[in-house]
Length: 261
Image (cartoon, rainbow, N blue to C red):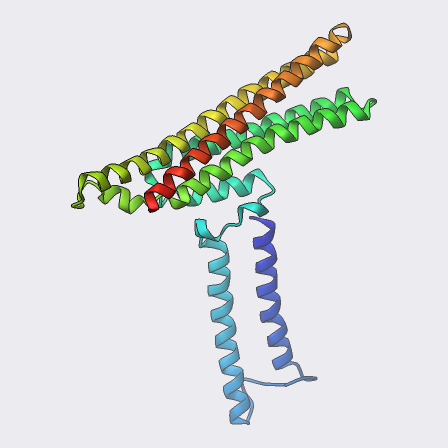
């Protein structure tokens, strides 16, 4: 259960408790179900009923009802679990991308495990060299941010992908030019999402290279400059993947404009 969800549950139940304490407390309203005053008795019965309904329905909604994918603010994502939860929300509305969604969830989980493993390694082996440890931790964060950046782009693309229109496209009567334009737009969306999954796989591979280079660097002082050079090359490769992803997104946006015209 997410922290935000726990806070919402706590607030809801505290409000119910406070209202009932205020209504039935002798020092405040002092309502009673057995009061001789008809208005007080009616208010007490109504409050008990309303409290029960609010408690049951409110807790049910907070505990079981999933948020719509449009309810998420991706700029506020901070943890791998938040990305995974948002991706899970796409499964019911984007059957076209179910394979890519599952692959991306797995990639996020793998990146999280690799990041933790490398951070643990740095703490154990670089604790006396704080500057080096900090610099290498920044490399870990950069690599992770690259992957998450791609995941956000993927979700944005799936958000504008109309699954129902895509399924109906073959059945709707359209002239050839319009049909081709629509197919081109949908095909570009699908290719874009698939390419992001592929790019994230490359980022994970480069991250594996980073893991290897860091472990070699700490174990072999004589190869320090060569090890650092290889680590820098790894980060350059990761950033190149990000730039390629942005070029692809620019091309996709241009096609979307033509489609809208």
